[in-house]
Image 1 (tube, rainbow, N blue to C red):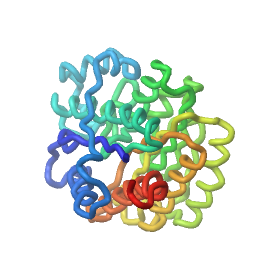
Image 2: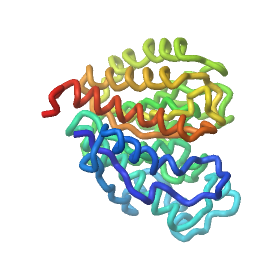
Image 3: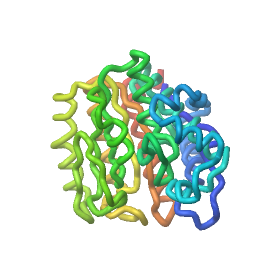
Image 4: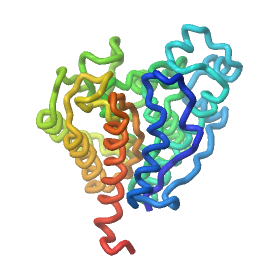
Length: 308
C-alpha cells in the first residue's frame, strides 16, 4: 500500500499574501481522495523528532534557540515564517515523517510525505522556509540505526539543496545530487556530490535528457540502498520563484522517470514535496498530485491490475 505522511500541523498559519502556498497541504490530500486515487487508509499520522534525533543533525545551539524561541529577528527572517513554538513543532513532525516514509518505502517500495523537502536548513540555522533538514535527519537516523548503508538524494527542486550539501559534505555514505536553476536562490551555492546547474528557461526535452543521462549512471556507480526524492514542482514554467520552463507534462514525465528507475533497480524511494510557487495554486496542487498518482500506478496498480 502507498503510505502517505499527513498531519494537520503541516499547514501553518501565514499572512494572506505570503509566498508560501500553505493551503496545498490541505488541497493535495483532498483532491487525491475525491478522485479515488487513494483512500483514508493510505494516510499515517507521523510522530515527531525527539531532542536526541534533532541533535543527530542540528547543533545544540540552534536547537536551544528554537526550543527557547530566542532566534534573533534576522535569523527568524531568514527562515521566512513567523517564529512560534508551533512552527518548531511542525518541523519536528515533518522531519520524522520523512524518516518514517523511508521505513515504509523499505516495506512497500515507495512512501510519500505530503510535506518535507526542507533542504535549505543547515546544521546551525534555518533559511528558505526550512527549520529542520528532514532528509538529512532521516538519512542520519537510518545510518545510525543500521537501516540503510548508502543513500542517494535526488533533489530536483529548482533551488539548490544548499543545506543538504553542507550537512552531508563529509558523509561518504550519502550522495547529494542536486539539479537546479543556475540563476536561482540560493545565490551562494554549496558544493553537492553532484550539482547540475540549468540555464534559465530550460524546457522539458533538455531537462529530461539531462536527467536520463545522469540518474542511471549515479545509481550504477553509487549503488544506493535508499533514495530520497525531492519532487518539487517549482520547475514549472508558471512558477513565480523558479526560472525553468517545464510543462505539467514535463514535470510528470520527470517524476515517472525517477520512480521507474527506483523500481527497476529495486531501491526503496521516499518522496518529499519541496517547493512550488505558481501564481495559480491549482498548478502547484495538480503537479504535486501527479507525483502521488504515479507512485500509486507504478508501484501498486501495475503490479496488481485487479486491485488485489
